[in-house]
Image (spheres, rainbow, N blue to C red):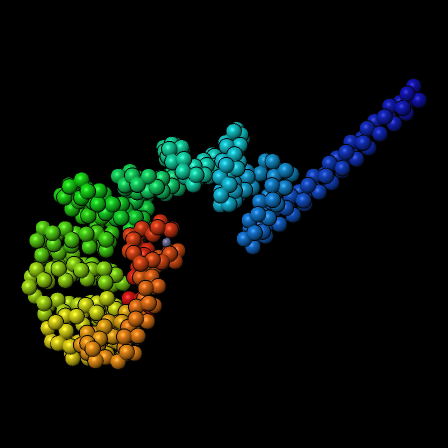
Length: 394
Ligand SMILES: [Zn+2]
């Protein structure tokens, strides 16, 4: 009996020893894995912060092999794939996560939003819309805002301004004090006004432009379009009122209102008042375009000497290449056949330099060109393109 007892005791001791050893080995292995995982995460983060996204992806992939449960790491990786343009792999990671049934509601929202962004960036707009509408129907206020932001992008890409305006207004209800959102809504209404005009629905165009001003009372695009429509309808007083509002709310865009203000005062047969207004506009925000327009009127009304003296005085205050080019043109016109060859050469040189310069620049992404756009062709931001200022600009 005692031998058997000793044998049993020995077996139990060996068993406990093996178990303890197993536990210790397991803990060592787990802590080793955790340490490796930590190392990989920090390495990946370091690559991300150093903007080395290729290395970051490889590092996070190694981390996922160690810990397949880490939802946040999966999400970060899918984001990286999308940013690198590998949308297929981003979709795969997101769909893999959605197939799991152990995700929290917050994680499900993040995965669905990520998937909608994947669809959006790969042009699968219908799928993005369906997914976002689903989020919209059941999400919290912040989740609904996230979905509405993306839905606005979906409709913008489709140029479906009616729906863009509709979901934008839903977002405005949740974010009433968001000026950028108000500016976007304002431009959507302007797009709808352009469509209405193409369909010869003039009153509808007026209504959309007024709606645009209800979102952003200083929207330069809506004010200029209302001015143009009023001029076409010989409504001079309303046209002047819109131009006054435009001047107050868009001091950096005054050159864009020049054609309209000239037309209104010409129709009212008040050339002197026009020059007065242009001088006022120019004094609030100096512009080569306005300066040249004023000089042309002075030349027509008072003659070459006055126009020349005005240009010299103004260019001494604020030099611009466009102003200089006009001054040389003025001198060449006046002294036809007598001017020194050097004036002609200077005029040509200025023209050649100006031919290479952009007139407008996007304050959001830096895109520049010679044509005015209300939406930047590169970054798609609304109302960010303005005339370039300074010696080489306006
Ligand atoms: Zn831009």
